Image (cartoon, rainbow, N blue to C red; front, side, top):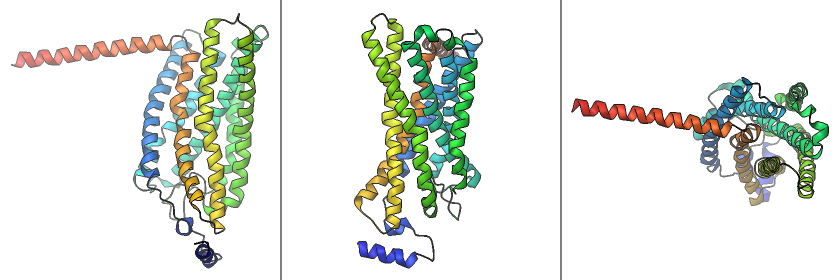
Length: 342
């Protein structure tokens, strides 16, 4: 009951930090199988997809066919790979029942790389969207500028610097408990008073503003494509695919996560004040689901390589044919050896 919770809160206040798990227990069994499953899928798809995409971009660079879009997509791939290499450690953490075995420093790095990937992805997706917007709405004015790599490289450096500046305050907040067993994705309860305003700020600067920019660009792009029937059909198809892909990323991966991350922090504050309802418990479960959805962006982002490189599909098919031939030859050799032995 609420009276019982208030009594517990008054008893623990001023002596030891409040324990939400005792004041308002939530069943966390769901996250101990859901998040490892999602992280395993994302790590496999992220390594294969981004590795293949970056390999193709490097192969294209030898032919001198880099473009401004390729540079932006390459940075996006690097951000994804930095994140997916940390996922096996998180899989271990949740499968062991939230027991962190890899030290406080690596816990901080692991949690940092998640947010680094999240906001670098949003930043570079914004740059890709603006780049495509300028190429469609102002094609003649941007014809020469869109082909030069210097401004795009400088823009990439600015995006990385801006993301690091936004994330730098997060180093102040502890990511582990006093025992060093837990590895928090946010911070401990006693830091909520300062952590919540920081998260609200980064939600605005790192997500809401880029989201409004992308929405404005795509609304104008759709209008231009509808009015101008002389747009190159291939450019039209790629632009529509980009609009759909980025819309899916924001609506599935980014938007729910930012909503429920802030709601979860608010619910923790309310629980510390003595409130405990089923709605607050459901917010925590929903937040865990959105964390898994947010990580999916590293598995979906490689689709952008298809838009940045025309020959990725061709190279992938050629590589697949070579692999099938090699495996077929190996299979025939093994069968022939068995027949000779018999």
